[in-house]
Length: 351
Image 1 (cartoon, rainbow, N blue to C red):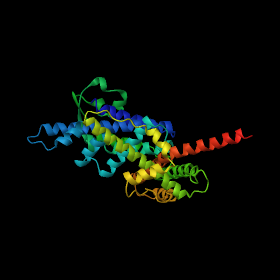
Image 2 (image 1 turned 90 degrees about the vertical axis):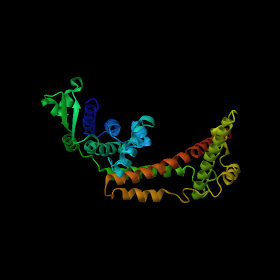
Image 3 (image 1 turned 180 degrees about the vertical axis):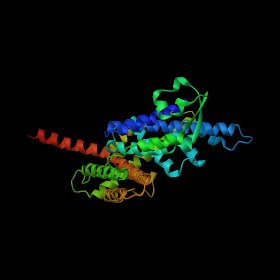
Image 4 (image 1 turned 90 degrees about the horizontal axis):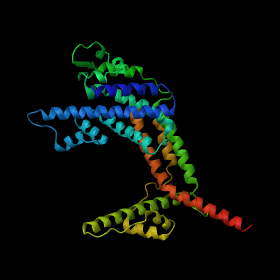
């Protein structure tokens, strides 16, 4: 009972948040649904481990038992997918939406305009899995201190039960929750499409700051290639030094400190070009051409996807590509701002 009642209560509270069309309520709903689904997966894993322990011959591998017992959400849902309890497309969606929950905790309002649609999608996914993860009917150990008014409303069997072990109808709970779930103001597919287009515009505008270089005459495609080369080379240097530190540690020698920030000072010099040839022979840029129009085309197709889960997967892929380019651009843009400030200071001094 201690595991089932909180799940029902959290999904019910998420419903109340989804009824209010505001990003704050969407954030709260997403967090509630994510935690409820984690509890559902945890309980299913516990059930499977219990069944496995009481078989004459165990069917789960040691790796599967480790994944089921562990706290890593991604490994739990992969384990449940392997055993056929969650479809692959839903597992992929759960991993993406769980990542958004983490983003709320650690990054903040990165994708706030669509958080409500994501919460709606996550809620329907979680409620739809109630039966497959927890069973159509479930016997609960009677724990009266856990039975709140909300629990009696959500699980009416708790009101009429006369036994120390209550049986609740989780299929009925699923149907009631899904029936009560409001429709978002805009479909998930359309919202994802609009948000990606907004993010593409932002990324293109940011790239425009550095596109022509300090001289204002550089080909933007050359600039794109340069910043990718520099970013990949710096990452390769860091990996090379870390591998070297591991070798030194294995010999009992102290590691050699590396100032990663200082590597940025080599941007715009031939040093990184030479190191790229040594560390990454045959290197090719991920984006040989400007990606913005390609992203817009893919974003426009999101609203035509057959299912919201399919649209979510494509959206997440485009979003990650944009995030990666924005990360690569961040330091060159900062350098360009510094250059402009230097020119302004020189102009002021000459007056």
